Structure formats: C-alpha cells, structure tokens
Length: 85
Image (cartoon, rainbow, N blue to C red; front, top):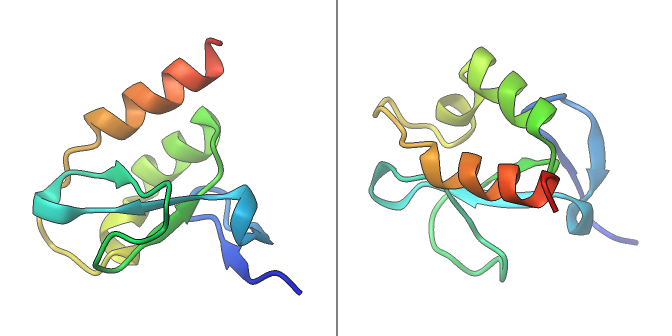
C-alpha cells in the first residue's frame, strides 16, 4: 500500500507518488523530485489551481513550519511550464 499525503492547496488526500514534494532550503521553495532533500516537506498537486490556493491560504509557511517569507518564483515557473506543455 502506497503512503498517502495531503495536498496543501486543495487539502485532498492522494498517493505520495502523485504529488510534488516541496521543501524550502534558504527560504526558496523548490521541488524535491527525488524525495531526498533534507528538511520538512509539503505536498502539492502539480496544478496551478492548487498552487494558487496554497499561496492564498499561506499554506506553505504553515506546512513547512517557518515564519520566513518564502520565495515561490521557482515553483511557480515550473508549474506554469508544466501546464503550458
């Protein structure tokens, strides 16, 4: 049985393999494709809607347990490139 995680954008539960793991080293949100980067991770569907919901709800900061301002530009660029393919 595959592990289940919750998307920080839509709050839906899904299999871990269907979600992106996001970590914030140095306050920069990056996707952890291999799942091996150190630190706390947050999970997100690879959709701009879930991303926008997470940003609006300030879910990344809560999920990653940080009070720092997070740079979301790299994650936003990656999601936009995935959608436009």
